[in-house]
Length: 552
Image (cartoon, rainbow, N blue to C red; front, side, top):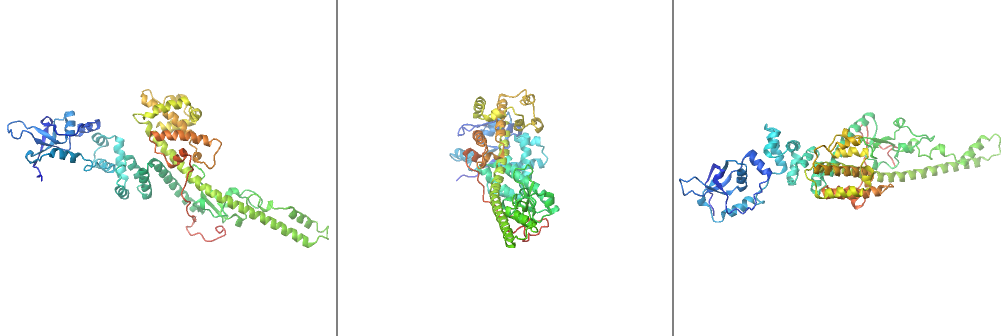
């Protein structure tokens, strides 16, 4: 059994220290980042040495490295004269101990770097104690942006999110992911979904979706308060409306005239639902009547004005001429009236049944369309974020040059249609990190200045790629691109172009969202089961009482 060696701390000249001939490491890997850190901070962790000439008291001490070959080599490369060292007693070392210590010191099972969160905490702590961002960046070998991002992430992440991160042992989360988690520190469910998405390789898509949903939630909270103030009922989920409910725009009054929304506010059946049919305003609403039949509203063709049958008209004519023809039998007159009433009732029942079936079909289609459009828009946002990041790289992925060249030579439909189109310029400006103003209706002369006079060959390649990518993005930006159930005349061509483009982006490292995989695989988009029915949110906050407008 070895005895704990006597240790002496000292500051030794680097030229007094020699490499251990028994060192098994073949490459010290003195990369630029490591050498920069050594030059900026010196050697912070002492090397471990033994004195080779301890039996020669009058000679200048010479030492042999036991641990710290990389630190010592880095210091000598940076012309650092002295480094801290721990000097061991050579008489207490056992046979083979040099090799055993090398295994233990460098074994990954015994060493663990700080997690990204722990690094962020350290950077934040340095700033809190008064170090400047520039100093921290210089001394840690990071950019100012990385230091700022890390500090912000550490500041925003609360105890709940930290507990989740510790439980998931999330050592592979980078600073960008941590910063995004900090945005949703007040929403544990969102944090859990984001961590799961990171593990599944769909983090950018899920982040885009969470941001969209948060913006929608905040906008709807404001609108909900406004509706409550104005005494207007809000039915939260249009996919679970009462069976008899119909959109106001599909109804007429007894005379066959369209209903006026401002006047309908006084109707007991008046209500609104969130308009999820593609409005740019996430808090837009659509108006409906919960039970038209109870309040004398009709679908066109079923209103009383349209129910004058030949028999009813004949009965009315006979009644007007009763004075002229006193021989008309009362029984025949009553029979005609009953027949007319029965015909009108049958027509009304048939129209209601048809309307109910159409409402149910619209409900199912609405739920699918809502989920699909949201998923596709989130995928667009995540994909363009990937493109913006890709285009800023210092080196291009290997497949890029060949794909750009082949695409320009073959000139597919997206390139033919959108390369010179000004509406595509806004997308191109966004991908090149230009301002929205620069991208608005930019002329050909304006666009020619976007590359800059000193652009490198790699930058020029990325700009050419961005031009093609913007053309494809314009080609497939319609939210309906995901839809197989309602194809338009050119939708299959668009989806075919989307497959080519999305497959190549995946080859470059883009993490495909589920809806993008549906497009590539030509499979239908699927959603979870529809949510349970949502009750009315009354302006006064009371529960909805049974009434004519809510009963089946």
